Length: 169
Image (cartoon, rainbow, N blue to C red; front, side):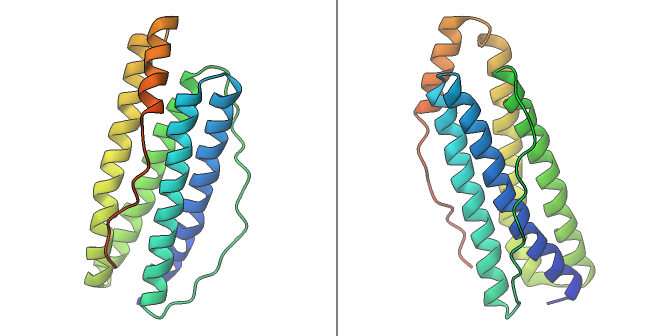
């Protein structure tokens, strides 16, 4: 594996674990506001990010590459309203998309087609993540200002269940 691609993927492992921390922080905010459904949504998001980190981790090992685990930064955002974490999540997903795209571009540049193929799943996943985040903002804008609407949104978020990714390495 090209050294630049290896460094970028290793860095991505740590960024995915940070994403899990960030989403747990959002879950904490919602739980403190009595919005357990939203807390559930972000707890599941955290599990997904941990799975993403482990997919990158396993890919590195499958390709004979060393993995260096760095310290995971403490989330430093604060939230005042139920909308704040939603907007922060969308911005974060766009950031992660840019990171995945950078790895993809580096892998293409050095003709590392195995890594390009591996990353195809993550490119698709990021599209889904951005859409989900944007949809949650739209729903909150439409219904979140009303107590009954917020209750229904919270119930919808509570219904989300965890499904592990089905990417074969």
